[in-house]
Image 1 (cartoon, rainbow, N blue to C red):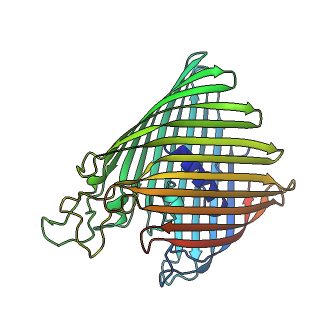
Image 2 (image 1 turned 120 degrees about the vertical axis):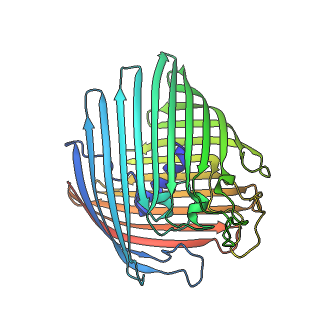
Image 3 (image 1 turned 90 degrees about the vertical axis):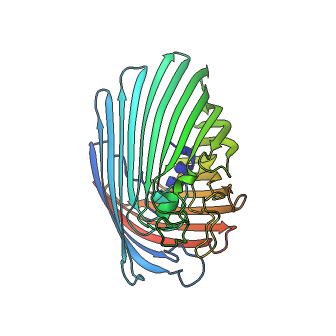
Amino acid sequence: MKNVMASAGLLALGAVGVQSAHAQLMAGAEKPWSVSGTLRGFYDDNYNTAPDGPERRSSLGFELRPSVAVNLPLDQTTLNASYIYSMRYYDDRPKNKADHSHDFEVLLVHNFSERYSLDVSDSFVIAQEPSLIDPVNSLPIRSNGNNIRNDGAINFHATITPLLGIVLGYDNTLYDYDQSGPGSFAAELNRMEHLVILDTRWQIFKQTTGVVGYRFGAVDHTSNDSLNPNPLNLNPDPNFVSPSIRNNRSHAVYVGADHSFRRDLSGSVRVGVQYTDYYNDSASGTSLSPYVDLSLNYTYMDGGTLTLGFHDAHNQTDQTGFIPGGPPISTTGAGAVQDQESQVLYGTVVQKITPKLTGTLTGQFQNSTYVKGVLDGKADQFFLLGLNLTYQFTHYLSGEVGYNYDDLESDIPGRGYDRNRVYVGITGSY
């Protein structure tokens, strides 16, 4: 999957304090299906994800979250599917007090033989929270409406010889934001992303697999709205700037390895270079940047696991360089911000404190530097911290308490914010 390491870190944080796309995805081992329901009470001191000022509002509220999951293992095929619905009610809002989100997850794995297998997955999300609709933080602020992300992938695995294998995959991600009009989220971020992956895997030693890989990516912006938020209401509008000015194609080549140091400690490394061509903007040209993907998994004791990771790659951004009410960058959009290069460092610790009490601590730091345009070299820094304690009263009933902290620091005035959330809840499952 695209941006696997960055997404893994963000989804781990979501599992603690927001709503994880993968929480409760697997059904119980004793039956092929499961259902559950969660009731949470919470306090959110900045539900608008706004900087200090009149738009920063706090609220008490509650969340209802039913879910259903199935796990069907067949002779050569396994199907996992889940659906999570969430309704969050904010007492402070004068209208539209409730948020509604939907999360569908499907994974199908088929083994043709011992040497060949195929996996197909799809993740469909309708949400408003930034970490749910866009896990790589292209838009780190809240977006009202029924915003859609659909991520579908297919991967073919083949063992050519006992020492050589390949993975050939395709990933397609669609983003569709509800906010429309000149300079809107739809203009800035509605897009389709394509990714083709070819990995060759070499069995160097019994516990070490070498990887030589190539990735081709393409980003196609799909909105018909202007990037320029300053229309002249003329037909044609001389201030209209097509979002396609931000389309790009990229090529990444890398080498790496997967190594099992011992039974409880394993790691993965990918290091290479990424070439990006902003082919519709002659002022932006091309970009050359590192491609890095690192992860470490450690079971440090019975009931205790540690996951660490680092990821460096490009991602889209809601910032274009256009200023509402200000002059156009140019009549063609040349000089618009193209995307960001982001370094993401994340970690998760899961510790069973007692046989019934489990604690989870997650943290993430993301540094995103703007590429090209009038904001070239400026940066956003995003900090995420989550703490969760879950107590299993019975096989069917558990309780939880948690805290989440978000902090966005930005070189762009009026963009940064901080946010604190605390919650307590109870979950029944069967």
